[in-house]
Image (tube, rainbow, N blue to C red; front, top):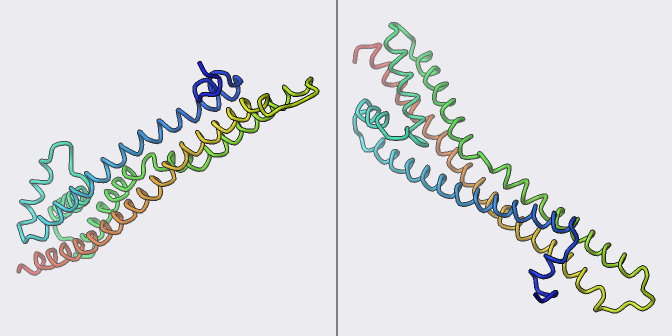
Length: 228
């Protein structure tokens, strides 16, 4: 095996530098796993919310939409989950008898807020891990670089004449640690910023839907109380 090849440099690196490289490799694999998983989840949630919103504003009966949402395999997702929680609470409180429209809407809003927090938490899960990998990997790689360079210069302690050929392998293995740190960090930072923005946009959509749905429920409850 060529000692100046990447594999050769990694195999001939010191144990400490190899441990740093292994940690960076694990961090990179973990990062890509989160990236692909989160990409599928956010895309599926956005698609489900788009489909539900189209059905909601199509003018259909809310009870029919609620039953269809409750029958979804795997449970409602995204905006549908917020609607299901709010309308379930609306039906439950309405059956209790004389309840003011304001109290009824407040109870529905509370249930929808809990559902929204649950949905946002599910979307944000593991994003902190991406942020941690993106912020710490370059420093871990730099630590491996420093150790590799220190080992190279330590090897020159008993040598009277130093040449580039003598320090090149050690410096090269040190730079590989830096490169691996960047390789782990850059995709994680890009993915974190992209997915965090998508989650915020979905959360804004959820807030808007909750306000509109609350207004609909308030009008509906007032019509019920007046017998219209």
